[in-house]
Image (cartoon, rainbow, N blue to C red):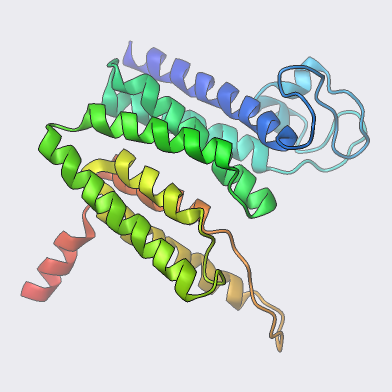
Length: 256
């Protein structure tokens, strides 16, 4: 029974991710994401229903558009698989409780923010505000007590304040200011795992940054601009679902 429910959540998450991709692609373009057929990015032909099936259509067509044969970005099926997997994890961790719908909404909005940041290197306020509200509601309902939520709120303010300070001290070159409210929402969502999530974000960002720098052409002095929102999302979500605390490992190494 658990497997069937988990499979249902996976497919629901994949469908939500497909819709989120449409919202992100049409946001601030004047197009409605509730009406109008999706079209091929390469030739502009309307897409038939078969090509809109999450994950399956991309695999069945071997990553190419059915209408013109152009190669299709793997970002869509990857995001569909990722949100499907996160929906399953959310169900397993929260169960069928009042927290679950809010958690699923927060994860969906977070995916929209990450996809938009990857495409435009900016976080739209409408999505960012909605995510912070959903994350705060999720964190409040998940907290064991008001005192525990107050502790999470303090950690969230500290994390967001740290990123805002980095933004101002670097003149906006190190990261955008919108990363501060994003981290505030992520910390409220993560609860007791907020500080570990903050650390994981910088670890993941450092590893990806080193890889990108290593792949630069020899002799190139151009900087590499990478949106930080995906690293924040990855770090906090990793900490939330694993509940792994790096401070425990650091303390063990210190005592050893």
